[in-house]
Image 1 (cartoon, one colour):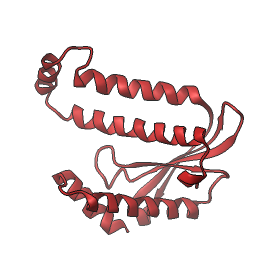
Image 2: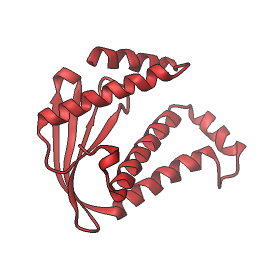
Image 3: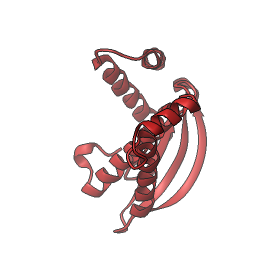
Length: 170
């Protein structure tokens, strides 16, 4: 897996854009949990050009469009549960950027254990990774997520539940 310090600028941008897209997806999911009347009230409270509703929709749309323009993917879709982590490998993609550099993008997640949208981890590799490598990297991400939660002064009830799930997976 690439370490941030070893990524080229393009790889870093792609990595960050993917993370931002995933955050917008989580925001969209949380926003959609509001009752329809509440969502309408929020829309009416602000101008349609900068309401929360539109920011979420167009932010997600922009991220997805930017991701699709930046590189060509050669997909090797897979779904492989990893029972020990209550996780899954969702896809392994051989990607090529506009300059022809080839690398591997692995999407894995803790969807079942972490709620509706769960956590999706995007991992980048120079070569096609072995399953053991992916599992090790998922474990590293879980440790980082636990540390991030534990740094927070206050957690929501959902975050507290997720923290407990993550601690059990370790």
